[in-house]
Length: 377
Image 1 (tube, rainbow, N blue to C red):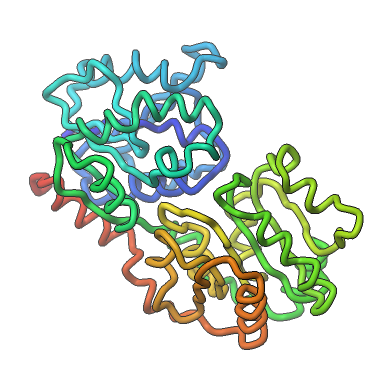
Image 2 (cartoon, rainbow, N blue to C red):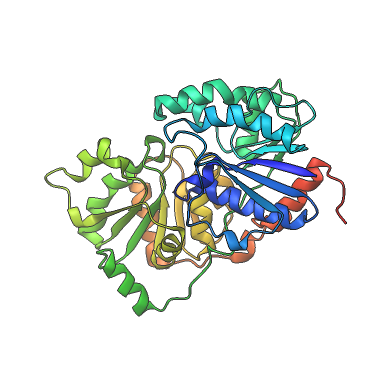
């Protein structure tokens, strides 16, 4: 069988969806070794992605020199995907985001993944270009897809709520991070302190990872830091894009009485650097207002880093009932102070047995059953 995959997320700096597609397609092609997987790259591939680890039945279709750089991926794929489906006799077209080009052949089965419903419930936090794109393609893709894959039960429930009328009623659920990459490094205390000093950390270290957008609620964490720093010497390392300079975050940290040493902004880091940060952090913290899954929470736990996270949306699924994870209901600063300090003082150990369900081999095996694919020889 022939599969065609929208690989646009492989052309930029590694993100949650980049890791998702990398792990999913690698395992999918491994289990379906007799099938052929074509990955369309409208603007090339991020050099940090390790090609040598990919199975031989994954073929990259690089169109980075075929179209003007300024032309949006959506327009390129609208023209390119239907033609490739016909030319390569594609049986299944898969998009890791809710986007189905127009004029796809009827004979080609369509699979999409939905990661969240931010465009519906918190659309004011999105750039106008993203709002426009999702308004044109998001709902249509969900309604017309032959198969639907969501990253969490929370997202599944939201799709069922907002799109009761759709071609595919049954929805597959499954997600994980890169189990091979995110794991304990077993650094001794001296090595951890040495690395912390490189980031300007002198004492206990909190870690935040995520895009710097309003729904991540980083402003709430930043407002906690002066007291945590002045009274306990606790510092926060923020990993995420540099868009914070254009938001209210800048006003918070540049206030005259704000302790500059309390927060260190890293900007974008590679996955290898991120693994190290998870391993040296004393606690991962997220006060997000909404998460379709909670990938940083899972990655932190996989690295043995205890977490304190908001008790809402899909973060409950990832954290609740896991040793080493604490969820906080609401946004009372005193509750967050207490839970953060308690976690730093007790340093609870993560129970890795509770994370076994986040395994790509079993997720893809179940996906293949959901797609009702014939067995391979």
